Amino acid sequence: MHKFKTLFIAGTLLAMAPSLALAAIGQDRNVEGIAAIVNDQVISLFDVDQRVDLFFATSGIQRSPEMRDRIRAQVLRSLVDEKLQMQEAERVEIAIDPKEVDQNIERMAGSNQMTMEGIKAFLSENGIEDDTLKGQIEAELAWSQFVRRSFGGRLKIGDQEIDEQYEKAMRSLNEPRFKVSEILLNIEAFANEQEINTLSQEIVRQLQAGVDFAAVARQFSIAPSAVRGGELGWVSTTQVNRQLSDVLKQMQPGQISPPVKTSAGIYILALAERRDGNAKNPLKNQFDVLTVGFQPETDIDTVTGFVDSFKTCRRAQTSAKDLGASVKRSGLQPLGDLPGNLHRALANLEAGQLTAPQSTADGAVVYIVCDRKDDQGTQVSREAISDSIYSQRIGMMARRHLRDLRREAVVEYR
Image 1 (cartoon, rainbow, N blue to C red):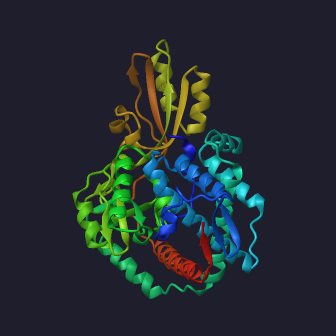
Image 2 (tube, rainbow, N blue to C red):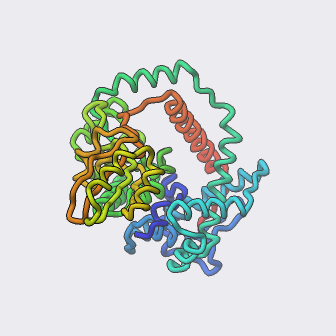
C-alpha cells in the first residue's frame, strides 16, 4: 500500500444517515452535472466522483460496484457538510491561506519520506486533481479554526474533574491493560439495520485481510481518535463500556474485533498489545548501541586497549576508525527490535558501558551503550487527562453545531 494512504487525513464520511435521494445518486445524474445545491452553492457530480476516487485511493478499501454505490452517498453527504462548514467559516470571516494548505500537505509528505511532487504524482496516477485534496484540507482547517474560535473559550475543565479521572486511572493501573485502536461508525449514517451490518462487516473483512487500520479510521471514524488513525492508547476494562470490555477480554494482540454495537455507535477495535497490570517490559527498554567490528587480523591487545581506553561514544567512533574497525550506530531502539544475541549482553548495561570483546567469524566485536531509556509502563498524567476531556467536549459541541446547520440549511439533491 502506498505510504501516502496511511497519512491522509480525511473528513468524516459517515456523519449522518443518507436520504432516499442520496441512495439513488448513482442512477440519478442530470445533464447539468449537479449533485446537490447547498444554500445556493453547487456540488457537481464531478466533485463527487473525484472525492470517491480519493476515498478509495487513500483508504485502501477495495473497490467494488456495491462498495462504490454505498460510498457515493456518504461522500455526497460529506461534501454537503463541508459546504456548510465553509459557509459558516466565511460568515465569521475565516479564510485559509493557500500556503497553509500547501504546508499541511508538505508535512504529510515529509513524515512519510515523500515530496509534494510525489503526492501530486500519486493523485495523478489515480486520476485525481490536486484541487480535490486541497479543497478537503482547506475545509478541515477552516472548520477546525471556527470550532476553536467559537467554542474553545467556553470550555472550562475543572481541577476536581481532572482529579477524579486521574484517581480512577491510577486505581486501574494494576488491572489488565490493552493497547487499542478504534473505529466508531455513526449509526445515523445508515438507512437500516441491514446496511449497518453489511458495511461494518465489510470493513472488518478488509481490515482482517490487511487493509491499513489507521487509514480506514481516518476515513470512517467519528471518534476524536480519528485524527490519530484511531489510536486510543492503553485502556483498562473499567475505562470502556461493558460491551467493549467483554470483547477486549477475548482478543489477542493483532486481532480485529467484529462490529460491536453500543449506544454511541458501531465500534471496531484493533488490539496491538495487552499487559497484566502495569508491569514494565524489559524488551521495550530502548538502547542506542554503537557496534565496533574489528578485522580478524587485529591482535587481541589492540582490541583490549580499545576497550580499556573507552571514555565516550564520540571518542570511541574516532578511535575505532583510526584502528581500521567498522562502526555502526543503531540510534534508540527497543531491545526487542535488536538482534536476539544482544538481548542478554545489553540488558544490564547502562549508558556509557560496553560489553567485553566477543569473537565472531568476522573478527572481534564490541557493543557500546551510548544511551538508554527504560520502559516506564503505563503513564498517567493530569495534562493528558485534561487534553482528553477537552477534545471530547469540543468535538461534541462541534457535532451539535453541525447538526443545527444541517437542520437550518436549504439542501436540494438532484
